Image (cartoon, one colour):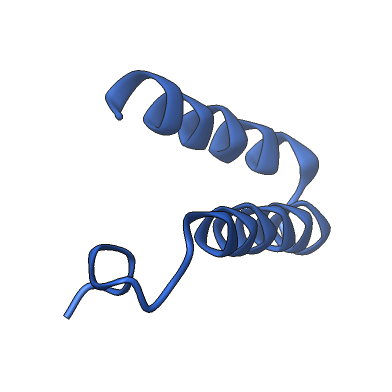
Length: 53
């Protein structure tokens, strides 16, 4: 069962979790690979969030 439609998770909690995991992932990617790769992934993520959805 999906947590948002079923009411087990509030939208604000889901938003904080998604932004938090994205931020941690981008920081880790920039640290472990390089900053350019993290920037490319960040732009891809932004285009997915703001254009696709």
